[in-house]
Image (cartoon, rainbow, N blue to C red; front, side):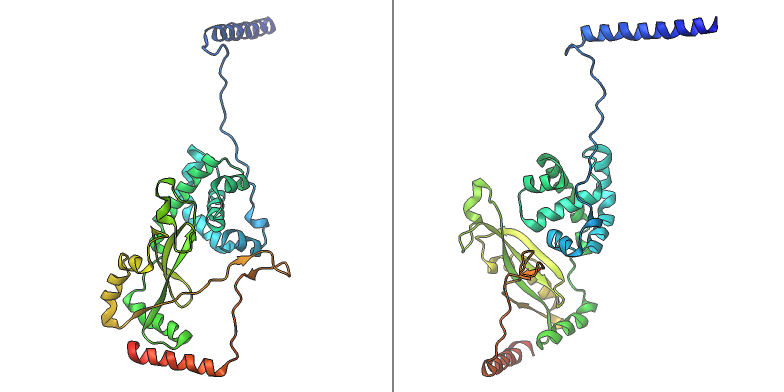
Length: 292
């Protein structure tokens, strides 16, 4: 008797489900019952642990240890993306953005390499950059007064010029300009760029960046409209200076003759002792005139 009742209940339940399905099918505006859509599962295409250190540096311009430290610091800000939108792990978000910044490529190209769509990568880019800006002052900080003796000593050890706290220079970063203001991004070498001013310490640690001006703006104007003159003015009683440099920074590439990393600009060694002595005399003259 119990088996009969159970079978009858199952049959009745199946009948109710069938009738309900027919009713929904007839009255649904699309003519069918909408099924629950599960969010897509993102499967990372990049695994940092399987990459050689040299290839990591070429691709992301950072080593593995630094990237992992950065991912750990940004993870709380990027975890919301997993729960609400893209479902992309924080490390993949950081790696895709670092690749984009290091390569200077287009969003679509980097998105494909990272296994995501361009709109998805655009959201990731905005999210990671916002997270980076929150931590910017933890990394880019002007030397404090108590640090000045050490900073000046490091510079002096390099060039024997006293009272220097850093080197300042500008560099043009190429880009595709906005259509409405294309002309202001064209620099003196006839390509489009942003004129970026940077200041670094003796160990090339960058502690000031000004990337607000297009390529047509002169270096002197950028310096006048940055915070550097004010900061130096505040530090003048400590007798410190910024030394302006202009040089070509070697660009690392992967296609070397030995399969390794090579520099596109090779340093030139001078064997002219008289020219070297003249350079030393000129340097000493500048030191006596401006820095003593």
